Length: 379
Length: 246
Image 1 (cartoon, rainbow over the protein chains, first blue to last red):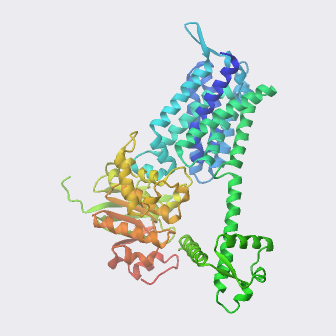
Image 2: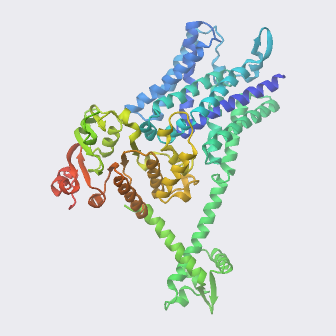
Image 3: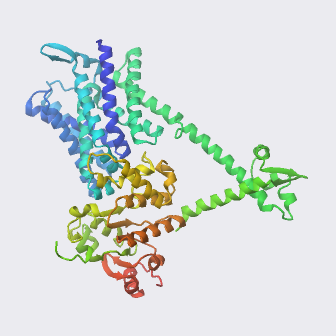
């Protein structure tokens, strides 16, 4: 297998492995927590390294995972005092633990291969050099196997505990009453986030881990109303970001991780603008339709209101109605043509009159608007 | 247990406080079986806190709660809960039917999936709250009243004996209010006990047969006709100046 292919396989696996817990972080409104965890686990790695003196020991993963959970615990502890808000608490805990790690590296581990740039940005280009050998036979880049294993674990856990995670994320109080401990699920989820981060950051760096964890789920959130589909779509978008980013990096000969993170931003912007229901264009179209629809109803209501009154000729007159509705003449003209076309309005000897179906429509619209107002403002 | 259980819920010496500011102070409360009970009191009187402390969602400083004479953990399956509508994110990507199915999770247990029988029960519950046509609707598209009816359907499928509801009448339309009260009365008819945090004093006499007045401390608890008096209301609301004629 060529190194290029191996790099792309690793990137796709990392992207999917990150996007799965990322969906739940986004839904729990804890996106910033991934930012904190991806950095503070460095402290766990350093402390683990001091204990076992082996940079590739699995013990480091345990150390890192524990620091990830410790980060969540510290943030919750600070938040619970009600003296600081959650985002402020993250802003304190994350730099604090991360900077302790930096100090320890610069002071004691200067001669060890822990490079802070590599921690932040990763170096995917080197990932294929790290081979996995069984009985001396090279079976491929180690990253494929280590991240592949993490991906399988993530998929398995989410599949097994899908129901439990869903109820805790949606309604943690009910979950607690029904006996599904929100604390247990919450820390389980954070364990997944920590383990995934530890596995991923060596290859792709912590910045790209955050991009992979948050970008695709947020895009998927704009595209679907179904939790399962949100998981599928964010996995797909994650893979697309990895492959698209790699093409950019290859073509322009720039940082692979940087290109993938940039591509994540681009796919998000694309979805943000063009998403069928929640994209900016659809929202703008819907608003426009709503405002035209409302203007039409306002006009019909005006005509109904003055129907049969003595000033009807002036209020609803073909040449005078423009003065009674505070709308642009051109806009009003077009609306009248549309309403006549829809057979809601007719012109009878110089005065606009409602047709029977127009009258029915106007009264129904009025009632449904009043009903919705009442249900919103009752009490 | 040979002892005849007189009260389905017994609260003893319940105190909840934030630092030195008590929210609930030494509350003793017994709820007899089969009543429709309102918890009433001014804003900040600890109504929701009392409900949550009873359900172990808030850790009290002191006090204990017994359900059917036993601890909460052993009676979990008999307890239904309807949180405040505003306590969840209605933009969560899921459908009405799925939310109602969550009420079955306690019976289904860990890891196992919901069965077609669970779905059937969920549909029956949706029908009871006149929401069966909305079963596949996204929850983000519901009005406030519809959200409340979905929560109620979810409580019904829990198939509990004791229900706790936090402000189910808060900000709902007249149709929903009627639907809620009909469900409450039906539950009582089936011998269930329902405890409701309520803030509308005008409707207490029409909707409930049992009432608890609190303002940090327990003011009074008992049948509406005995307890819901001007004297007790004045005691409960004296600090707020908001006193209603009975």
